[in-house]
Picture (tube, one colour):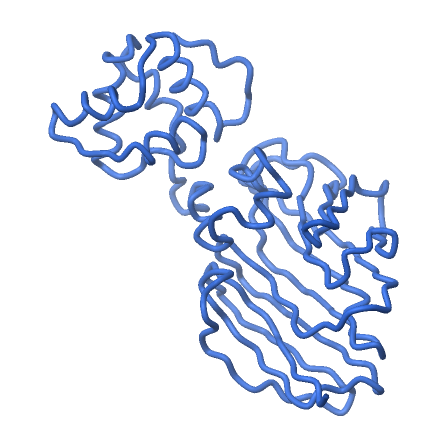
Length: 303
């Protein structure tokens, strides 16, 4: 049986065992594909590569049958690989699916570049339940503050932090500050070449499966260059509710605002509707039972 003790991440254990068995037997993926074809199972090299790299796991009936066929071919006892597959919990959350991340973010996204090898396991230990986000647009027409409150639930034991990634309208990292109201400062990285900031925010304590926590943080920007035209949030799993509240400075009022939804980052907006400002120069978006995708508010300046 292959040694998988180098990782305790359930999402990575199948990939590690599969890759190690291939290396030990000296097999290429095209040999694996051809062996499966002899049993009437057609899987692409890309699919097998994703299994090996942890980008996805076998879930469909044909793929599960392929795993059972591959175990003796790889010199493994029956059940060695299949025992490492994630199971969909009854009445609970669906298993973490790296393919769903790319379904929303797209291939080779900025978020994937920021996270690197961690991208397939991006917040795999948590599910966001409710997100409340307040965005402030200052008199220079720039988003200068984003305040976020997130309710999360652990989908496995020992969950202890939430990873967040935000795109910035200004790439000047010296002008950006990331703050939390409680606990130590989060581990933060700025990537000006991608206009992104990422942070690992502690939950306050390690959670057991199905326990919940509330995460709060604020992102400040002191930049006075550039102009903001939108703010959006990407969700790769269903959400109970999302409240996006956008506040405009009285000396920076847009001519029109819209809220929208799209299935993935590069797709055309769907359900784009006018979002009128109130007397306090604010507008908001409040979808409930959110399906995965991109939710946002954009606006138009008069000149």
